[in-house]
Image (cartoon, rainbow, N blue to C red):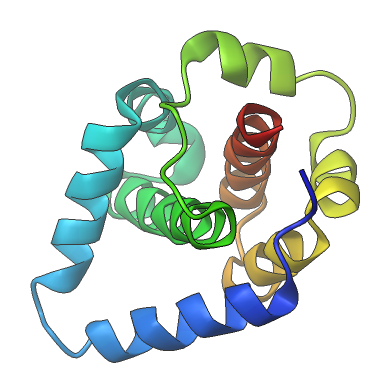
Length: 135
């Protein structure tokens, strides 16, 4: 699979920004990701302490849904659910470097929208698992 192009990321981010005007949108996005990728959602939630609490977990899941939407838009269909095995396979080596190499536009999105290192690492891991699934 080719990398998600910058144009797709830009389009998705623009649309998400517009949807954020609806106060319920973020909750819908978080719930949608947790339903579509239940294991990935549980994995992120398991890092509650590393992330700094429940609000940070919700932000991480929200950004994971943005990544998910970028893949969905690029592929033209939804990804199969990210499972624990997929996350384990993706966890080998330097996750953030591998993510940046495999999906530069998505890695740039994460780098420019996420300040906390633990959140960036988790999103890189989820993004790599999504990339591997999409292959």
